[in-house]
Amino acid sequence: MKEKLMVAWTKMMFPVKNERGAQSLEWLGIAALLILVLGIISTALSGEKDNIGKVVTNIISKISGMVGG
Image (tube, rainbow, N blue to C red):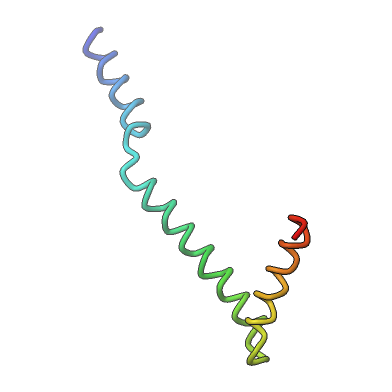
């Protein structure tokens, strides 16, 4: 009986403890999300040359306005 319980316990706990690939999948998800966001930004800004500078200036001015500067 004890041996059957040990086998059942091992079969039940092995999938829970087997997390070697979980962190890799998380990093792949983060990388995919970053590539997606960068693709959307580059598509939105591809039409104009000075658009990136304008966006950065606009962000800085809005942040300084929120802070009170």
